[in-house]
Image 1: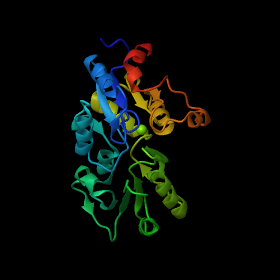
Image 2: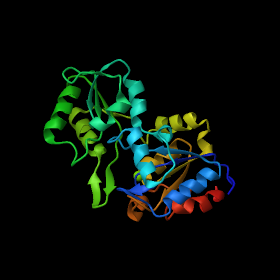
Image 3: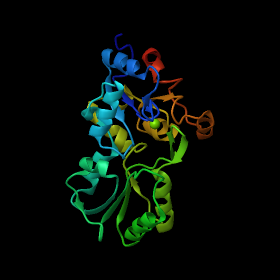
Length: 258
Ligand SMILES: [Mg+2]
């Protein structure tokens, strides 16, 4: 298959598009291989902040996907740049720390607080209070992403955005957000791939983070009906993707329509 469309790069959301839990979406491995063979540049773009890029690439490799660590884009790199030399309190999983190496950590008197995924059932009240008090003391509030919910094999779970919003509500301050749907995030990935936004296609199962975010940054978009996709969310949102597909497996054929 040769590249038949105006699209040069494909940004793939991972969770809900390539896999759900530990299982690849049926025929997703073959679809990714077909797209790579056709000459498309591929990037994995994820708001997942429970694992390092290296671990994410390892998980994808175990499932048979040919994406390397350098092909994976997460919010951590943008956050690293923004924080710079300031004292920071990181509320993140230990597994993410290798992607945030070199920061000046200070959990007593931070100038910046970073909220990331901590796994489990999310932020317990004592931890929310700790973040709240730092922000009330003047620390800048940053969030690695602000997703509302995520899909696990047993159903939907509250995501980081719920806890970030609680802190925003209590403090009256707005969090700086680094992951999807931030325009800077999408444009940063396009710049790394050396393509213009309109030459890139964002593929996702989240109508807000992936589709509205991608559109807002000027990318073409494809919504897949796997993972957290629910027809009623899409209807309520009023957001229209350029392509709506049953799954990633349908992308190699459908991409010629763009
Ligand atoms: Mg997803």
